[in-house]
Amino acid sequence: LTDIGFDGGTAAKALGYLGLISTVAMVVLGPLGDRINKRIFLTALLAAHTFLLLLLTHIQDEFTLWGFIVLYGILLGAAWPLTVSILSDIFGSRSLGSILGACTIAFGIAGLVAPWVAGYIFDYYRSYKPIFYFTIFLSLASIICAFYTRKPE
Image (cartoon, rainbow, N blue to C red; front, side, top):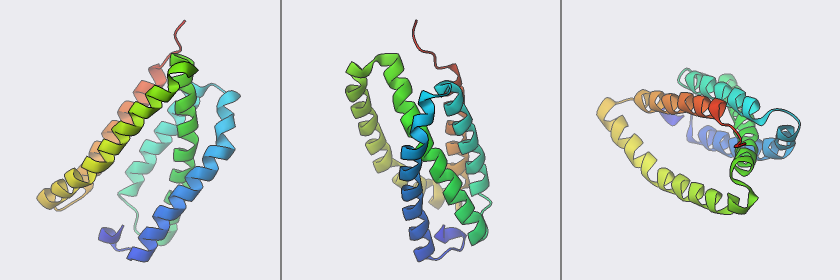
């Protein structure tokens, strides 16, 4: 955000509010997965997530930034409980802890490596756009995976 003209305070507030909104959305929207088709709901959330990532590259003012933060926070918060619930449906609650532990390790490694790779790519291309396009590609792949995920019979 600072690279596209926002001051550091605004960028920090945006990140903080993103976490807050995401947490509230987990609690408020998580139970929806028990009432509607989880796979379809998750697919729709991931499609909206991808669309928002496309918009992220065009944010130019604070109004757009805060709209993005609110919507993205809601999507992040709503998607995680659905993902965990779908994993439980597929693998059972007995294996869920091990699976989430493996996911946490993978997220940690990605969180460690991704900023370094992003910095290298930014230094090479003088832009974050290649990173965003790769993220959008991964997001599109997640839509396909979510849509075709099925509970074993």
